[in-house]
Image (cartoon, rainbow, N blue to C red):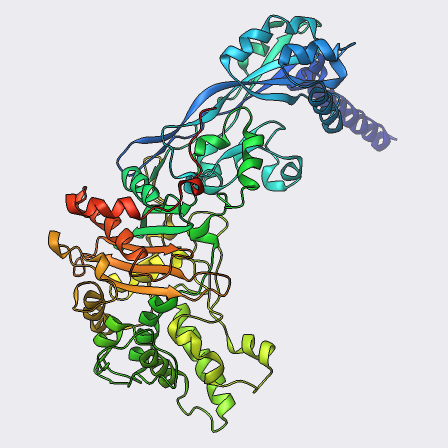
Length: 614
């Protein structure tokens, strides 16, 4: 009995302890912890998300390119809208009645109890005309935010633009923290560096009465968090050089990409036709976007990253380097200019070495160079020999960053095409093709496809005698440098001595007697240019013109590729344009006697999407 009596007290003690724990917890929840009170009082609290100040964008010389300016959004909570006079309301907003009704319908589809934007990008003046009347329209409020404004009328394709987040994007996990009506980078650098530019949101809780009038901070701001401004971007782009290159490309379709070969920094990035970045900001942006989208010249198409073309004769340099590394030719290997193999563009001196072949851009010479690389007797079966040889050739070519995305700090990059044996197996059948099927690759034609950025990177690689940094636009984020991946040196598996073997031929293209790129010569101002012309066959119209170069030849500070659609011979149109950009970068000015080139380089002015004031 005594034992049972003791056990009774133990059980009672346990129950008492449990009751004490629950009582203590209830006291903490109801008296000390305000979070539950916060949840219970949501009908008298207003949660205000503080959008951070978006980071600014500077060019390589510290000039502000993109900044922020205050604008206002008219928000609506559909459940709170009472007996709305839509006609009067539309007249107040100076919007079509149907547009107001459509906006309200979209807001209801999103949520009847959450605020969403009805009208965005109101200026201070526009806000002043409606603010005093909003008291007559319950359910509507004004939200201030910062919008992008531009101190430049160039670089639209590189900078990209900021737009309102779409319902489709809100469904993705990576955008879970965004709210309807918030803005984010849509294209270009604004999109790629969204995380860095956006910063971190803050939250404020405000007490409001039943009429929605603010009564002060909840618990003296105990639950508030501060927003953190986004980081600034410091670009490698030179706004002055960019503006000059865009001026030269006015009236044309094509691209210009200029790199600093020693760092991989992009100095100029032109996609023509161009447009003013201001067109994709502010009120009415949607209409202007559709105008650009429907333009037959396709100004929104980012040609340096997305347009893939056969590189033409500029690709002969890569083929020669691959052959030299494989040991199937030497710099002094002669090949006859045999028209029976492939047609040559013009009569010229006998290509007794690689320098003359590059200078004269001899098609039969490079036909035989690639044939020596591919057909090496790996198999007694001629079909298999060609197949094995092309596979090895492709593996070496891709080390130059071709046939794959380089990884530039911008979306939309295309990888191009370096055709594989499997490609021809699928098209022609297994063991149904030989070198004669693929010989056009030897002169940069046929199925091969390369972007302007990729070819510029090839020029940077040759300038560096065998290595490159991944091309990039941003040289600094906040107070730091570029992203780590842009500080890694890549080698292409070709010995430096082989690059030294082809550079003299590239110099003679520009400054040699009878060179195909004589229109790019800057010898009169003491600049040695190493280059290569290209004329790309186009079955749909006039040939495309291209020119690839770097300068100074023995201490390269700029690598450049110019591609102009339907402009014919590269030496006539692309070469002089490249020379002007090179001279502008290296000297900061253009020799007076060369200004006449600027007069005839542009084509019809109606191809240029001129700046408009909105």
